[in-house]
Every structure is written in C-alpha cells, then in structure tokens.
Image 1 (spheres, rainbow, N blue to C red):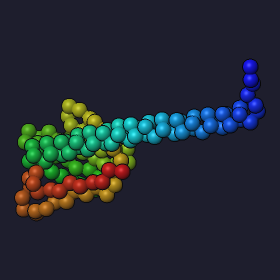
Image 2 (cartoon, rainbow, N blue to C red):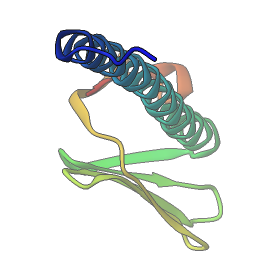
Image 3 (tube, rainbow, N blue to C red):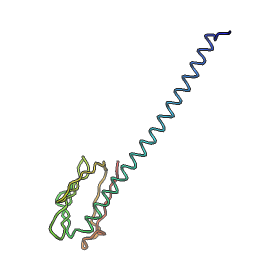
Image 4 (tube, helix red, strand yellow):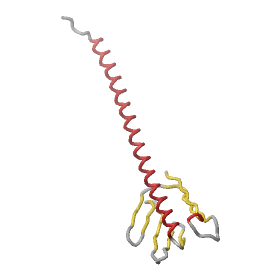
Length: 131
C-alpha cells in the first residue's frame, strides 16, 4: 500500500480550494442576478401603480390645484379631493377612503402643463426618473 506524499496532498488541497472559490463565486453571481431581477420587477410595479393613479386622477377630476410645488390636489365633481404629495419618503396618495405611500425613489420629477387653456388628462405631462 502506497501513501500520498506531502507534495501530492498540498497540490490536491490547492486545486480543491480554487474549485471551491470558483463555485462560491458562481453561486454569488446567480444570487445577484435573481436579486436584481426582483428589484427591477418591484420598481416596475411601483411605477405602474403611480402611472395608474395619475391617469385616473387626471381623467376623473374636473379641477387640479397645485398650491405647493410638492403637492397636487385633484377635485372631483362631487367635491371630494384626492391629494398626491411628493417627499423623500416616496409618493403619498390620499383620498377620503384610503391613503397609500409608494416608497419609490425618484429623481427630477416634473409635472408640466402643456396647454394653458385646456385642463384635461392630455393637458399635463408627468415625467420622473426612478433611481
């Protein structure tokens, strides 16, 4: 029966260590891909919710009041208001029945009135860049 020499054992340990390090790196890469995909999907869902809320409020309200640069008030025909405000914590949507905070980070939010004579859902342009 032949025993392994010290050199053979050391070479086997070095090769095993390299293979183990590569395996750990591959697992980390796949975990990061999954995490980034989940984060992107979550951000897309939040943006869809925000766009839907704005579209609904612009379409159904008859008057829009912008007293403050970080807040819009949508007045409905029955007199009920919906308030949308923008803060560092996210975008807050408050109506008589509910209040939601959408924790999306955004940069360079702009709400621009395109036509000064017509107030409608097509009369405003909402743009922001999620970060």
